[in-house]
Image (cartoon, rainbow, N blue to C red; front, side, top):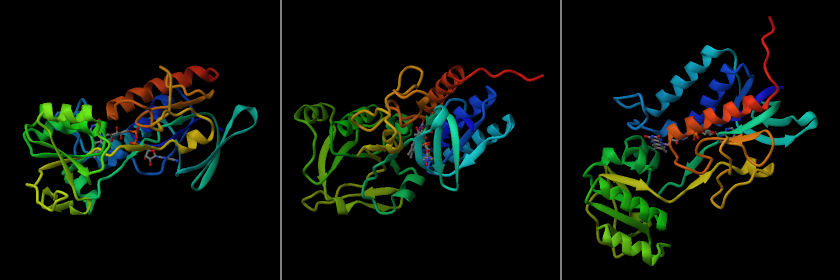
Length: 301
Ligand SMILES: Cc1cc2nc3c(=O)[nH]c(=O)nc-3n(C[C@H](O)[C@H](O)[C@H](O)COP(=O)(O)OP(=O)(O)OC[C@H]3O[C@@H](n4cnc5c(N)ncnc54)[C@H](O)[C@@H]3O)c2cc1C
């Protein structure tokens, strides 16, 4: 039996584990190994790293820090969760099982990728991005494409006007869901709205090529933002009765508590700014709330 089962070893899960171990709580961190942070070529907006930090390096540092606070149990992807006797949660994960007094969901989201061949490589080179708040600054004065189909994508394109006069919102085909109001805002912001053929997207070196639905080639783009939405990894949470919002994000209160007793959530899987610093902050709040909720720890000697 552990004090807390943490689902996910991204920035949120690893930070929560660090805090809980420092509160002298036992933790089991179960992870499916697909943190969004592994995809970050170099983050320049995470405080404390003037030269930026690569996502995998940040995760490695968080894991290294965790080794300084005593043992942590590790597991693979969580497959099943169920309430059991004595108010304990029963968990089955890849290669094991455990019982815990509390649960923290730090399972993140996955980005819906645009149909760009070899998108993974385009993310690694920084051509394809997902977060203008994170790295719009690094795209200063680039020729930027935002690929999306709705008002959220329109807002993202308009946000990027702070960095470049050259923004196009590319819809995949002509059947988009961008409202007339949002279309007017795009026009007012000098953002071009262009329907492209979904099969025409192609990477050439460090550039993205695309063709309009009428076949005409567009001048190459230097930076591309995918704005097709995200899928919060909240299926297990929903399965045990945790409340999620319309977009699938877990609903929590100011202490990161879900509607279920002893069940918490932090990071991207919770609605809000999908940022490392936010994930880490929420994890610190959640870990402290979990510690305060559990029976007190007393030193034995
Ligand atoms: C290309 C890119 C660039 C980015 N750049 C920046 C940046 O510069 N600055 C910034 O602040 N943010 C950036 N972000 C966002 C940042 O990566 C996320 O905000 C951050 O990783 C969220 O941390 P998290 O711990 O909530 O989720 P994640 O890091 O996504 O971790 C969630 C973990 O939970 C695991 N998991 C899911 N389901 C289960 C399950 N059933 N059982 C066990 N484990 C499970 C996943 O496999 C994953 O390992 C970027 C994201 C991308 C994609």
